[in-house]
Image 1 (cartoon, one colour):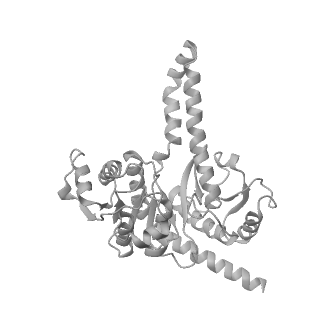
Image 2: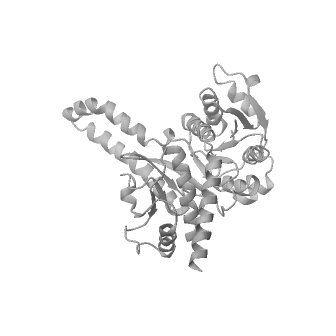
Image 3: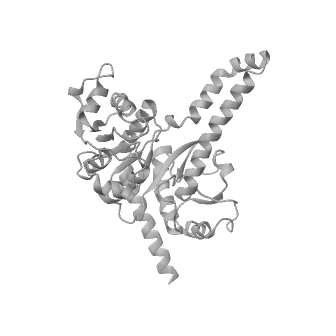
Amino acid sequence: MRIAVDCMGGDFGPAEMVPGALQAAGECEAGIVLVGDENVIRQHIGTVEGRSAGRLDIVHAPSTISMDEDPLSAVRHKRDSSLVVAARLVREASAEAMVSAGSTGALVAVGALSVGRLPGVSRPVLATPIPTVSGACVLLDVGANPDCKAEHLLEFAALGSAYASSLLKLDRPRIGLLSNGTEPSKGNAVTCAAHKLLAQSSLNFIGNVESRSVLFGAADVVVTDGFTGNILLKSMEGVGSAVFDMVRQAAMGSVRSKIGALLMKPSLRQVKQRMDYSEYGGAPLLGLAGLLVKAHGSSNRKAFASAVRVTSDLLGSGITQRMSEACRIQKESCSTEVSHGD
Protein backbone atom coordinates (compact mmCIF):
# COMPACT_ATOMS: atom_id res chain seq x y z
CA MET A 1 0.00 0.00 0.00
CA ARG A 2 1.17 3.52 -0.82
CA ILE A 3 -0.17 6.84 0.42
CA ALA A 4 0.37 10.04 -1.58
CA VAL A 5 0.91 12.98 0.76
CA ASP A 6 0.18 16.56 -0.34
CA CYS A 7 3.11 18.32 1.34
CA MET A 8 2.18 21.85 0.23
CA GLY A 9 -1.35 22.19 1.67
CA GLY A 10 -2.57 23.43 5.04
CA ASP A 11 -1.89 26.58 7.04
CA PHE A 12 1.72 25.61 7.77
CA GLY A 13 2.66 23.91 4.48
CA PRO A 14 5.74 21.71 4.10
CA ALA A 15 7.31 22.96 7.35
CA GLU A 16 4.82 20.78 9.25
CA MET A 17 3.50 18.42 6.56
CA VAL A 18 6.88 16.90 5.69
CA PRO A 19 7.97 16.12 9.29
CA GLY A 20 4.49 14.80 10.02
CA ALA A 21 4.59 12.47 7.02
CA LEU A 22 8.07 11.27 7.99
CA GLN A 23 6.90 10.55 11.53
CA ALA A 24 3.97 8.51 10.20
CA ALA A 25 6.25 6.66 7.77
CA GLY A 26 8.03 5.05 10.70
CA GLU A 27 4.76 4.08 12.41
CA CYS A 28 2.50 2.65 9.69
CA GLU A 29 2.74 -0.20 7.19
CA ALA A 30 1.93 1.82 4.07
CA GLY A 31 4.65 3.39 1.95
CA ILE A 32 4.70 7.19 1.78
CA VAL A 33 5.01 9.26 -1.40
CA LEU A 34 5.77 12.94 -0.78
CA VAL A 35 4.13 15.20 -3.39
CA GLY A 36 5.10 18.84 -3.89
CA ASP A 37 7.98 21.10 -4.84
CA GLU A 38 10.90 18.66 -4.70
CA ASN A 39 13.54 21.23 -3.67
CA VAL A 40 11.36 22.49 -0.81
CA ILE A 41 10.53 18.96 0.34
CA ARG A 42 14.21 17.97 0.41
CA GLN A 43 15.05 21.09 2.43
CA HIS A 44 12.51 20.15 5.09
CA ILE A 45 13.57 16.50 5.08
CA GLY A 46 17.05 17.74 5.92
CA THR A 47 15.71 19.34 9.10
CA VAL A 48 14.35 16.02 10.40
CA GLU A 49 16.98 14.07 12.26
CA GLY A 50 17.57 10.50 11.13
CA ARG A 51 15.84 10.77 7.73
CA SER A 52 17.55 10.75 4.33
CA ALA A 53 15.94 12.16 1.17
CA GLY A 54 17.53 9.36 -0.82
CA ARG A 55 15.39 6.74 0.90
CA LEU A 56 12.03 8.43 0.17
CA ASP A 57 9.73 8.59 -2.86
CA ILE A 58 9.17 12.16 -4.00
CA VAL A 59 6.90 13.24 -6.87
CA HIS A 60 7.53 16.78 -8.08
CA ALA A 61 4.54 19.13 -8.24
CA PRO A 62 5.66 22.77 -8.56
CA SER A 63 2.42 24.67 -7.86
CA THR A 64 -0.04 24.88 -4.95
CA ILE A 65 -3.80 25.48 -4.66
CA SER A 66 -4.41 28.15 -2.03
CA MET A 67 -7.40 28.30 0.30
CA ASP A 68 -8.86 31.42 -1.32
CA GLU A 69 -8.91 30.10 -4.91
CA ASP A 70 -12.07 28.87 -6.59
CA PRO A 71 -11.81 25.09 -6.01
CA LEU A 72 -13.24 23.85 -9.32
CA SER A 73 -11.31 26.34 -11.45
CA ALA A 74 -8.06 25.65 -9.56
CA VAL A 75 -8.38 21.87 -9.98
CA ARG A 76 -9.03 22.24 -13.71
CA HIS A 77 -6.23 24.72 -14.43
CA LYS A 78 -3.53 23.82 -11.91
CA ARG A 79 -2.87 20.29 -13.05
CA ASP A 80 0.69 20.47 -11.75
CA SER A 81 -0.41 21.37 -8.21
CA SER A 82 0.47 19.05 -5.34
CA LEU A 83 -3.18 18.24 -4.56
CA VAL A 84 -4.09 17.37 -8.16
CA VAL A 85 -0.90 15.35 -8.73
CA ALA A 86 -1.48 13.36 -5.53
CA ALA A 87 -5.04 12.55 -6.66
CA ARG A 88 -3.71 11.54 -10.08
CA LEU A 89 -1.45 8.99 -8.41
CA VAL A 90 -4.54 7.45 -6.81
CA ARG A 91 -6.45 7.44 -10.09
CA GLU A 92 -3.55 5.76 -11.88
CA ALA A 93 -3.17 3.19 -9.05
CA SER A 94 0.33 4.43 -8.25
CA ALA A 95 -1.05 5.01 -4.75
CA GLU A 96 -4.08 3.59 -2.96
CA ALA A 97 -4.84 6.76 -0.95
CA MET A 98 -3.91 10.42 -0.52
CA VAL A 99 -3.85 12.85 2.42
CA SER A 100 -4.10 16.64 2.21
CA ALA A 101 -4.56 19.51 4.67
CA GLY A 102 -5.34 21.86 1.79
CA SER A 103 -8.59 23.31 0.48
CA THR A 104 -11.63 21.17 1.30
CA GLY A 105 -13.45 22.37 -1.80
CA ALA A 106 -10.49 21.49 -4.03
CA LEU A 107 -10.22 18.04 -2.47
CA VAL A 108 -13.92 17.37 -3.10
CA ALA A 109 -13.60 18.64 -6.69
CA VAL A 110 -10.49 16.58 -7.49
CA GLY A 111 -12.11 13.53 -5.91
CA ALA A 112 -15.15 13.73 -8.16
CA LEU A 113 -13.32 14.80 -11.33
CA SER A 114 -10.12 12.77 -11.12
CA VAL A 115 -10.61 9.79 -8.80
CA GLY A 116 -14.30 9.25 -9.57
CA ARG A 117 -17.29 8.18 -7.51
CA LEU A 118 -18.36 4.67 -6.58
CA PRO A 119 -21.41 3.30 -8.47
CA GLY A 120 -24.60 4.56 -6.85
CA VAL A 121 -22.97 7.55 -5.13
CA SER A 122 -24.14 10.98 -6.27
CA ARG A 123 -22.03 13.01 -3.86
CA PRO A 124 -18.91 12.15 -1.84
CA VAL A 125 -19.16 13.09 1.84
CA LEU A 126 -16.65 14.12 4.52
CA ALA A 127 -16.87 12.09 7.72
CA THR A 128 -14.96 12.51 10.97
CA PRO A 129 -14.89 10.69 14.30
CA ILE A 130 -15.68 12.84 17.34
CA PRO A 131 -15.24 11.92 21.01
CA THR A 132 -18.27 11.08 23.16
CA VAL A 133 -18.75 10.24 26.81
CA SER A 134 -19.02 6.54 25.90
CA GLY A 135 -16.30 6.43 23.20
CA ALA A 136 -16.70 7.98 19.75
CA CYS A 137 -19.18 8.51 16.94
CA VAL A 138 -18.96 9.43 13.26
CA LEU A 139 -20.29 12.81 12.13
CA LEU A 140 -21.02 13.47 8.46
CA ASP A 141 -21.15 15.62 6.37
CA VAL A 142 -18.65 18.08 7.89
CA GLY A 143 -18.09 20.33 4.90
CA ALA A 144 -18.26 18.73 1.47
CA ASN A 145 -21.95 19.41 0.67
CA PRO A 146 -23.47 22.59 2.18
CA ASP A 147 -26.79 22.06 0.36
CA CYS A 148 -28.37 18.60 0.28
CA LYS A 149 -31.51 16.75 -0.68
CA ALA A 150 -33.11 14.02 1.41
CA GLU A 151 -31.73 11.36 -0.95
CA HIS A 152 -28.20 12.62 -0.31
CA LEU A 153 -28.63 12.24 3.46
CA LEU A 154 -29.75 8.64 2.90
CA GLU A 155 -26.55 8.01 0.90
CA PHE A 156 -24.48 9.65 3.63
CA ALA A 157 -26.06 7.36 6.22
CA ALA A 158 -25.17 4.23 4.22
CA LEU A 159 -21.58 5.38 3.73
CA GLY A 160 -21.30 6.48 7.36
CA SER A 161 -22.56 3.10 8.54
CA ALA A 162 -19.87 1.31 6.54
CA TYR A 163 -17.20 3.69 7.82
CA ALA A 164 -18.29 3.28 11.45
CA SER A 165 -18.25 -0.49 11.02
CA SER A 166 -14.56 -0.27 10.07
CA LEU A 167 -13.54 2.45 12.50
CA LEU A 168 -15.56 1.54 15.59
CA LYS A 169 -15.77 -2.23 14.96
CA LEU A 170 -19.59 -2.28 15.08
CA ASP A 171 -21.82 -4.75 13.22
CA ARG A 172 -24.86 -2.47 12.89
CA PRO A 173 -24.04 1.12 13.84
CA ARG A 174 -26.93 3.19 15.18
CA ILE A 175 -27.79 5.95 12.67
CA GLY A 176 -29.14 9.24 13.99
CA LEU A 177 -30.42 12.20 11.94
CA LEU A 178 -29.39 15.58 13.37
CA SER A 179 -32.43 17.77 14.02
CA ASN A 180 -33.86 20.31 16.45
CA GLY A 181 -36.04 17.72 18.17
CA THR A 182 -36.40 13.95 18.47
CA GLU A 183 -39.91 13.80 17.00
CA PRO A 184 -40.13 12.68 13.33
CA SER A 185 -41.95 15.92 12.44
CA LYS A 186 -39.13 18.13 13.73
CA GLY A 187 -36.68 19.82 11.35
CA ASN A 188 -36.85 21.54 7.98
CA ALA A 189 -38.39 20.02 4.87
CA VAL A 190 -35.20 18.18 3.88
CA THR A 191 -34.75 16.68 7.37
CA CYS A 192 -38.36 15.50 7.55
CA ALA A 193 -38.13 13.91 4.10
CA ALA A 194 -34.81 12.26 5.00
CA HIS A 195 -36.36 10.85 8.18
CA LYS A 196 -38.98 9.04 6.10
CA LEU A 197 -36.38 7.60 3.73
CA LEU A 198 -34.12 6.45 6.57
CA ALA A 199 -37.04 4.87 8.44
CA GLN A 200 -37.84 2.80 5.33
CA SER A 201 -34.23 1.77 4.74
CA SER A 202 -32.40 -1.36 5.88
CA LEU A 203 -30.05 0.74 8.03
CA ASN A 204 -30.19 0.69 11.83
CA PHE A 205 -31.94 4.07 12.01
CA ILE A 206 -32.86 5.19 15.54
CA GLY A 207 -34.52 8.50 14.62
CA ASN A 208 -33.66 12.14 15.16
CA VAL A 209 -30.95 13.23 17.60
CA GLU A 210 -30.38 16.70 19.00
CA SER A 211 -26.96 18.36 18.98
CA ARG A 212 -26.78 18.38 22.80
CA SER A 213 -27.10 14.57 22.79
CA VAL A 214 -24.31 13.87 20.29
CA LEU A 215 -21.44 13.99 22.81
CA PHE A 216 -23.39 11.70 25.14
CA GLY A 217 -23.34 8.89 22.56
CA ALA A 218 -26.92 9.19 21.31
CA ALA A 219 -25.90 7.52 18.02
CA ASP A 220 -22.88 5.85 16.44
CA VAL A 221 -23.35 7.81 13.20
CA VAL A 222 -24.85 11.32 13.08
CA VAL A 223 -26.04 12.46 9.63
CA THR A 224 -26.58 16.04 8.47
CA ASP A 225 -25.70 18.41 5.62
CA GLY A 226 -22.18 19.82 5.26
CA PHE A 227 -23.13 23.34 6.36
CA THR A 228 -24.72 22.25 9.64
CA GLY A 229 -22.14 19.53 10.29
CA ASN A 230 -19.20 21.90 9.85
CA ILE A 231 -20.73 24.43 12.25
CA LEU A 232 -21.43 21.69 14.82
CA LEU A 233 -17.87 20.34 14.56
CA LYS A 234 -16.21 23.75 14.94
CA SER A 235 -18.59 24.68 17.76
CA MET A 236 -17.52 21.54 19.63
CA GLU A 237 -13.84 22.39 19.11
CA GLY A 238 -14.41 25.94 20.32
CA VAL A 239 -16.45 24.92 23.37
CA GLY A 240 -13.85 22.33 24.35
CA SER A 241 -11.03 24.89 24.20
CA ALA A 242 -13.08 27.50 26.07
CA VAL A 243 -14.04 25.09 28.87
CA PHE A 244 -10.41 24.12 29.46
CA ASP A 245 -9.43 27.81 29.57
CA MET A 246 -12.17 28.44 32.14
CA VAL A 247 -11.01 25.49 34.24
CA ARG A 248 -7.43 26.78 34.08
CA GLN A 249 -8.50 30.26 35.20
CA ALA A 250 -10.59 28.85 38.05
CA ALA A 251 -7.72 26.60 39.16
CA MET A 252 -5.48 29.65 39.64
CA GLY A 253 -8.02 31.48 41.80
CA SER A 254 -6.76 30.42 45.23
CA VAL A 255 -4.21 28.26 47.02
CA ARG A 256 -6.85 25.59 47.65
CA SER A 257 -7.89 25.45 43.99
CA LYS A 258 -4.24 25.27 42.90
CA ILE A 259 -3.70 22.24 45.14
CA GLY A 260 -6.88 20.62 43.78
CA ALA A 261 -5.79 21.32 40.21
CA LEU A 262 -2.43 19.72 40.88
CA LEU A 263 -4.16 16.57 42.14
CA MET A 264 -6.53 16.54 39.15
CA LYS A 265 -3.86 17.30 36.55
CA PRO A 266 -3.34 13.68 35.28
CA SER A 267 -7.09 13.15 34.87
CA LEU A 268 -7.59 16.51 33.16
CA ARG A 269 -4.74 15.71 30.79
CA GLN A 270 -6.53 12.50 29.76
CA VAL A 271 -9.76 14.42 29.09
CA LYS A 272 -7.91 17.04 27.06
CA GLN A 273 -6.27 14.32 25.00
CA ARG A 274 -9.66 12.77 24.20
CA MET A 275 -10.95 16.17 23.09
CA ASP A 276 -7.88 16.98 20.97
CA TYR A 277 -8.72 16.88 17.24
CA SER A 278 -5.09 16.06 16.44
CA GLU A 279 -5.55 12.64 18.05
CA TYR A 280 -8.30 11.68 15.59
CA GLY A 281 -6.47 12.20 12.32
CA GLY A 282 -8.27 13.29 9.19
CA ALA A 283 -11.73 13.11 7.70
CA PRO A 284 -12.07 10.60 4.83
CA LEU A 285 -14.01 11.64 1.74
CA LEU A 286 -16.38 8.69 1.49
CA GLY A 287 -17.97 7.44 -1.71
CA LEU A 288 -14.99 7.65 -4.05
CA ALA A 289 -13.23 4.91 -6.01
CA GLY A 290 -10.06 5.66 -4.02
CA LEU A 291 -9.40 6.83 -0.46
CA LEU A 292 -8.93 10.61 -0.03
CA VAL A 293 -8.45 11.96 3.51
CA LYS A 294 -8.77 15.61 4.54
CA ALA A 295 -6.50 16.61 7.42
CA HIS A 296 -7.38 19.66 9.52
CA GLY A 297 -6.28 22.86 7.80
CA SER A 298 -4.38 23.99 10.91
CA SER A 299 -2.68 20.61 11.39
CA ASN A 300 0.75 20.64 12.97
CA ARG A 301 3.14 17.72 12.40
CA LYS A 302 1.55 15.66 15.19
CA ALA A 303 -1.97 16.04 13.75
CA PHE A 304 -0.79 15.38 10.21
CA ALA A 305 1.10 12.24 11.26
CA SER A 306 -2.12 11.05 12.91
CA ALA A 307 -4.04 11.67 9.67
CA VAL A 308 -1.54 9.59 7.68
CA ARG A 309 -1.67 6.76 10.24
CA VAL A 310 -5.48 6.74 10.15
CA THR A 311 -5.34 6.56 6.35
CA SER A 312 -3.04 3.55 6.55
CA ASP A 313 -5.38 1.84 9.03
CA LEU A 314 -8.39 2.48 6.80
CA LEU A 315 -6.61 1.01 3.80
CA GLY A 316 -5.87 -2.10 5.84
CA SER A 317 -9.54 -2.43 6.77
CA GLY A 318 -10.64 -2.49 3.10
CA ILE A 319 -12.72 0.68 3.51
CA THR A 320 -13.29 1.26 -0.22
CA GLN A 321 -14.70 -2.24 -0.68
CA ARG A 322 -16.97 -1.70 2.34
CA MET A 323 -18.22 1.57 0.81
CA SER A 324 -18.97 -0.12 -2.50
CA GLU A 325 -20.87 -2.95 -0.81
CA ALA A 326 -22.87 -0.52 1.35
CA CYS A 327 -23.90 1.49 -1.71
CA ARG A 328 -24.90 -1.67 -3.58
CA ILE A 329 -27.05 -2.97 -0.71
CA GLN A 330 -28.73 0.39 -0.19
CA LYS A 331 -29.43 0.77 -3.91
CA GLU A 332 -30.97 -2.70 -4.07
CA SER A 333 -33.02 -1.97 -0.96
CA CYS A 334 -34.37 1.26 -2.46
CA SER A 335 -35.20 -0.52 -5.75
CA THR A 336 -37.10 -3.23 -3.85
CA GLU A 337 -39.09 -0.65 -1.89
CA VAL A 338 -40.01 1.24 -5.09
CA SER A 339 -41.19 -1.97 -6.80
CA HIS A 340 -43.31 -2.92 -3.78
CA GLY A 341 -44.76 0.55 -3.72
CA ASP A 342 -45.80 0.18 -7.37
